[in-house]
Image (cartoon, rainbow, N blue to C red; front, side, top):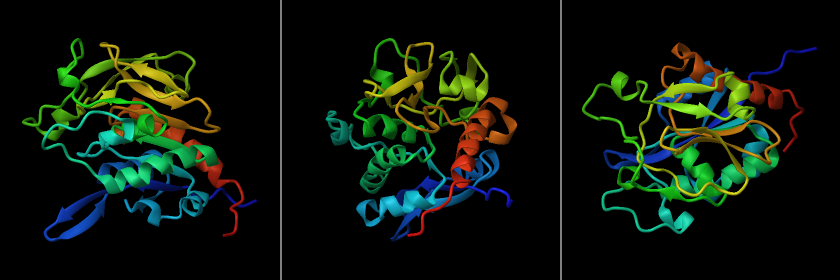
Amino acid sequence: MSETRQPLIGISCCTTTVGPHPFHMAGEKYILGALQGAGGIPLLIPAVGAHIPMDALLEQLDGLLLTGSPSNVEPHHYTGPASAPGTQHDPGRDATTLPLIRRAVELGVPLLGICRGFQEMNVAFGGTLHQRLNEVPGLLEHREDTSQPLPVQYGPAHEVRIEPGGLLDRATGCSSAMVNSLHNQGVNRLAPGLQPEAVAPDGLIEAFSVSAASTFALGVQWHPEWKVMENPFYLSIFKAFGDACRARAARPKRTL
């Protein structure tokens, strides 16, 4: 019997402009997370919306990794108020990831959403977002200090309490953990069908799973991809994701 092939993990791209030219990009840390942490082969998915035949793509993928980004989901996707002036948006990414998330869950593709990806998952299933957590009474400061070097920005910021018996508990074996915090948006109303998996000390939901998913489907607000091989808690998330991707890779592929 031949060994299970290495899983193919799709990674969402953002659009940006370098000089006069548009580019589709994903941060190296996400690529290394998929490669080293999950043990997969990374494949970048351009943010071109309906130009991608999603079923054909997902049939070939063994996992889907939704990355963080400097941009925010456009608020019209969750009937939110207009963004503050200067807020970065990426409509091409929204047009790609929001339908891709829903279809990936329907087709049983393992899914890991990080930061913006976590927020996209909530919006895709009908939830809403706080656009400026720093203006919500009673919430912690969840933004990073951009004047500090990256190791400080991505260092431990606050604890999360992990819900017992949930997907994150089973994946990590932890009842709580220290995580980094580099975001100013977060869950306002949790979407129907999403199950809280971790909560910050201020009550903000920091992780959830998709109740109806037939396989691994987890969103986390923090950044477990950061130096993933050096952090056992972060690595356990990627390993659980990778295990689900390998299970999908073992199934016969449909000929297109």
